[in-house]
Amino acid sequence: MLDIVFYTVSFIVAISVLVAVHEYGHYIVGRWAGMKVLRFSIGFGKPILTRVAGRDRTEYCISAIPLGGYVRFLDTREGPIEAEDEGRAFNQRPVPARILVLLAGPAFNFLFAVVAYWALFIYGVPTLIPAVGTVEPDSYAAEAGLVTGDRIVAVGDRQTGDWEAALLAMLGEMVEDGRIPLTLEAEDGWQRDVIIDVGDDAARLTEPGLLWDGLGFQPFGTANISSEVGRVLAGGAAASAGLDRGDVITAVDGKPVETFLDLASVVNARPGESVALEYLRNGVLQRTDITIGTARVDGETVGRIGVEPATVSSDLRYTRQFGPLESIGKAVDRTISQTVFTLDMLARMLTGDVSIKNISGPINIAQFAGESVERGLDYFLGFLAIVSISLGILNLLPIPVLDGGQIVYQTIEGLKGSPLSERAQIIGQQVGIFALLLLMSFAFYNDLARIFG
Image (tube, one colour):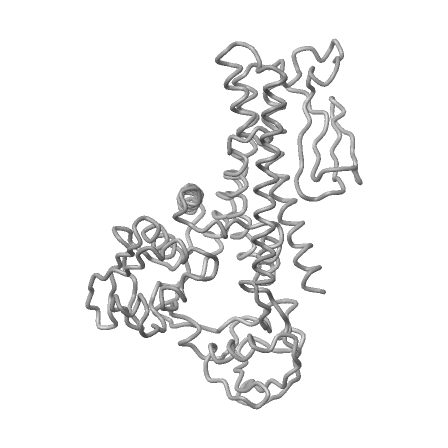
């Protein structure tokens, strides 16, 4: 129950921040373009907090339903306006100004992602060099000749300095033709080229949580490191039990654990159970009782105690950290690459090359929000950046009830010299609402399918 509340609050905070950024883009550019703003609302429905301020007596509101927001401009289509406001209504301003205002919301979402990544690069992002962990026999990876310890130097013609770059490149290559060309470097420094060929299985492997098991190998990580605690997550079971960084967990209910993978295997299988945990602190064996927490992963309830491993390997882990000026370029590059990747995946969903099960609704987003908050501010910032990019892209889709659809309307008006007929606009709105409801219903279905399997 506490997890649900925590995830819900995290979701509301995340959505409220991103909606505020999006709507502020409309608001500030609208004011710059000479439009009168009647209301700036975070959330829909009845306002629960309202402040009236400024020369235009704009209402700044927090409303009851925290799933969006809006900026309401003065508009002659909604009724007569005062003589002193002539020329300041949205539909009275030039078409280019209206389009600029509509573009500003998504643009501010992309700008927010740049700022978030900029802050992360200054702070320092812990990074793992992409290396191959355990390889399953008779798998695609085994057939291609991958060996535990191989480092992935490049995927196709793209260099891969970290796992994020490697993962994005692998997905891009796989959905292209079912083949993943890799340049690998063995532990002795010898490099070789291999191809993981999944053929027609590519679309299935894009389903959430299936990639590594489907390919038949795991990233080098928990299978290869000790059970020493590197970080205790706030609000988790380990924090409640008093565990601290540097503790080495040796047994769970008398069952010895030697690696972090051993620990994860035992804990995952016992969600909600009370167990006895043995650990070494400064060389002294100690014991504590702990109630294992729960989490939903790929539709299953698994155990979590809220700890992260201490280290992977000093030669595989490094921190990506840059100065304030250099971080700007890195942040822009990261935002562009994430945007291009998201657009590519969306396009391939339409063609069937990528599973539509990747469309997530508020339930799944709330879970990710809560987990990122638990892991720390840097993870939460990264989560916000990705969702902000997705929100920007979504609002640019040519659906009449979204910014993209309204931009299409304004463009048509600019070309023909007059607005679309009221009937055409009503039909467009109805089609747009139906499309959004269909998309939301499918996202909810995916969320529930993950929960209930």
